[in-house]
Length: 486
Image (tube, rainbow, N blue to C red; front, side, top):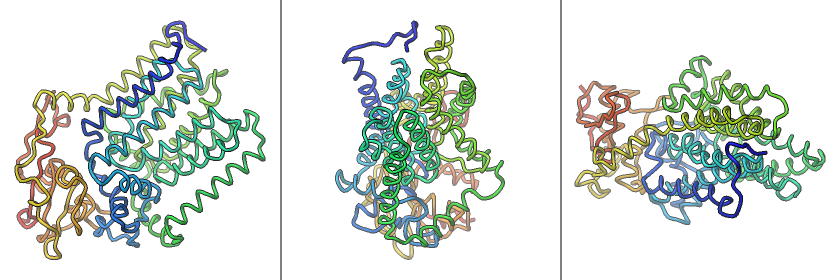
């Protein structure tokens, strides 16, 4: 299958070009400090940090959330264990955590490239894969979804290429199930991809009995691993997990859907629109690769179903992008030159828009409008130490640029320092004894919520307020809560 407009290159150089580009692309972003600090970071990495220090599956930064269990049972345990293992090998630092995410991005890209190549997609589409991965993963910061997607995609591409080997089928399902064990939000998508792969293997000639045996064995091993991770505290886990899930997904379903759309960066919305339009291809007949269509159809059906249930969350955008890539590759041989160019142009345009803020941010740093400078006394030793009389609340910016993620004992996550389902310290009456060690995003929130005028210089490249950037994104302020109480 080839398109006369974009013939497939051949040779060893072509084989390694797109995987090498993906690797270098994410290495470059990692050097630039991407993903940047995100408000959810400490919620998701706190237990891994604690375990890397020799502790249990506990996130002490969430002390004020008052979950039913002190164990970190509000999320599946897979991510915390994987992160703890990584940090024990490479050490606790911002570089290690960024590299952990970058490794997941590269694995997603390589797996997707392999999947598209199995469907004989054009090389240009392969070159767009890293941009699609970055569109979906950079905005989520250090959350667990990229690792979940990486595991799921690795299992999927293994099945696509080596479907005749029982050991590969077993480990392929195991990786997909591990993807569900890593991040709750995208676990239904991991399941959808696993079902699509199961059907494809069966239609490719693998006997149903063998498939059931191999998938069942990998599922049992996943369940056993899960039970070991939570030390067989199943009732305690389910109670805490349900408590957290109810606080995040309860209420008006339409309102939850709107909340999800507001959660997305406005620059990601064209990608969502492109996904919705691309689903029309599912009604075409005679796809060049029915397996790719099945992946897109199963994943998209789950996304739509979760939307009706009000359960959409971080990570869903990737499966929208994957569906676009899969459908484009599946029907590529049926497109004429004009439609091929139009389709690729639409994908390129949507991805460029999705990355526009990142481009502006990098440009601002390169031209000196955004500074990497920090406060002269911005060192861990100069920061206040947590005490019972004066708790210290730290946000994600301070955790990275002051403490290098070597957080002081007794610190509390600023973004999750109110009893659940509330989160921020401003969601409840301020505690005058608290001390905040926070960066520009938190200062902006304090100004908005408490009607303050704390200094926060911004660079506004296009004159639109929501497109402004802090001029000193690494600058940290020490704020005493008592000074904010009127």
